[in-house]
Length: 190
Image (cartoon, rainbow, N blue to C red):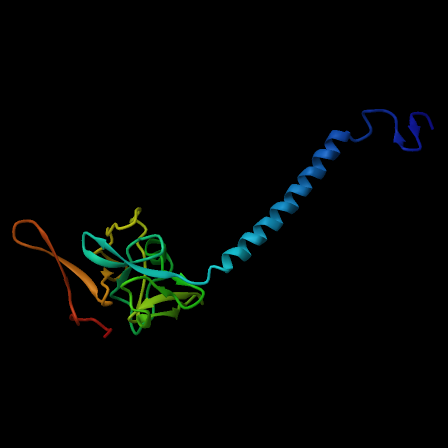
């Protein structure tokens, strides 16, 4: 036949570009490598099995913080160690999650750290039976922008080293004083 050889068509317009084939092969290899890398990243992330709760000095005094140094809060709507914050609430108040028993930093009592199963099956870190949350508007470590806010049906408070809500009250002269109460009215926990 005219215009063909044993290796295919001789007309350049009818045979695939060698550059195109090389590019397609390189793209396929890159996608395979990306898949292998992302599977490794997911598997590597699953090895991070614990969360560490530590103490940090803030404008409220010493409070519990997550591994990034962000203030941890309790939600007054939570009952019996179970979270009442899901959906949109959990977007603003992300729960501190762990895959195993959390670790205690200096000043945090290890015996008071535990986990509780959330409605979605994930394990949320608790301290003295309080499920722990960070606040999405605390952008830097040590910020306490969520203190005393009433959202999603109840108030939010930073957590003291004793596992109690840190409540602030304006004192005479415009300064702020910090108090922790043990127990305070409406506190469902010890």
